[in-house]
Length: 299
Image 1 (cartoon, rainbow, N blue to C red):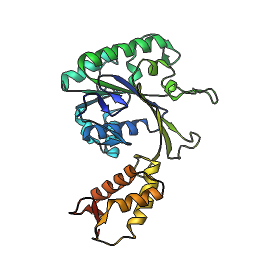
Image 2: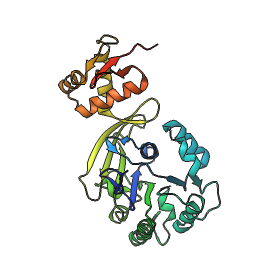
Image 3: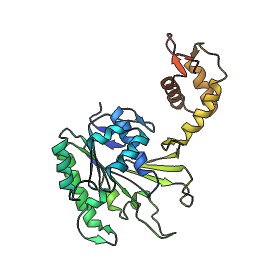
Image 4: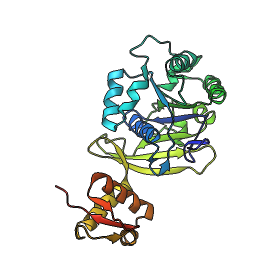
């Protein structure tokens, strides 16, 4: 297990991070998929995650709503360590919420708070906390993260703006203040590709690590309501078509798949991910000979 990162290269341990996006953008979905990958110690869109005890607080959704999302994404485990300030009369104050979590689950090493901005006290600038209050709030969170060696991930929505008057940098859209990005470590932000069409499943995921190169991933919603990389969707289709041309139960070397995938524009990592997925679902298996695979008959 890494002691430096929860998610390799993008979420260092014992820091305060932010995830944001407009209402309906898929912010909670992409966050829960991240938590599932951390719990399992698997990859999240190509980034290796490292397992540690997670506790979750919802400041803006009931336990029933949280449970519905958990079931859709496949992270029901989270409900065993979840508090909702909608269901329980807990004061919307960071220190109060933090102490509640630690009293129930003292082994917590990652604290995730949805509706993070509701815990920021002080003066308001319109509907949102002022820059100074956000800065002070995040300093308090960061001191607690460092002192207790707990990684904090706060989630909240974008500020609403008039058409044509939005923020150029996605980091600055979260609750209408650049202080959220300026005084946190890494920032993750999800955007609708076509906000005018709520049925459009395509999304852009912006990842802004504090000490690494920023990246943008093209995602899309599946019919099951989870987000996948668009490259994965296309690769699955093309590689599945190729698989159907191969004989059953015959050993085929990995390089055959890699060469075909690279000819179609996919990386070796994408091909290996596809192979692992097909092994899990039972349509392929590893042969006894190292580096070889077999196509299986499925009912």
